[in-house]
Length: 178
Image (cartoon, rainbow, N blue to C red; front, top):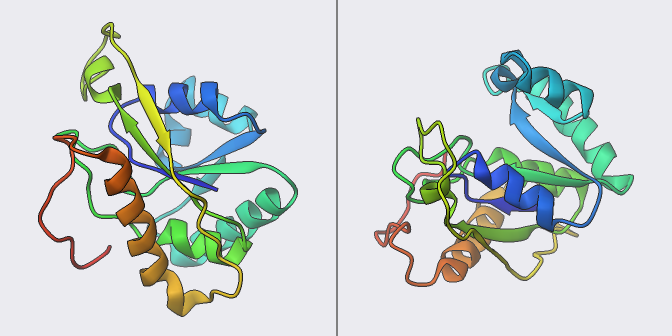
């Protein structure tokens, strides 16, 4: 399972281009209602998560876990939505609950340059370079639900390290994971 920052629609294109496996995005259910885009998500069998309905979200995690165990790679944006200012936001716990339930390694990913390529509200792609940096896979074998915070912090710290001196990383301590 790949866990990445999310700043632009260009993130998805870059990940699709570089991840060699058959993969699916884990996406909030509202995206499936967008004309054309939502139909494409449904047709490609991406995984819908209803973040407002915890019971439905856990059902989707079971479905996603089965897909991952069958050989698909899942891509999850840990912040839950695109960053409006390009800076790394606090991570949601859901992706890490999914990784633990699926018993798969988590591969941290830092994406840089996508914010400049298509900033929020941008309608056109700007020329530039998008860089993806992949971290060391973090195993989840032997972890349970109570380990989700520690896993979240471990992956977050790797992503911050992958970002290096990027101006898009908040340097203050992150507390209170969502």
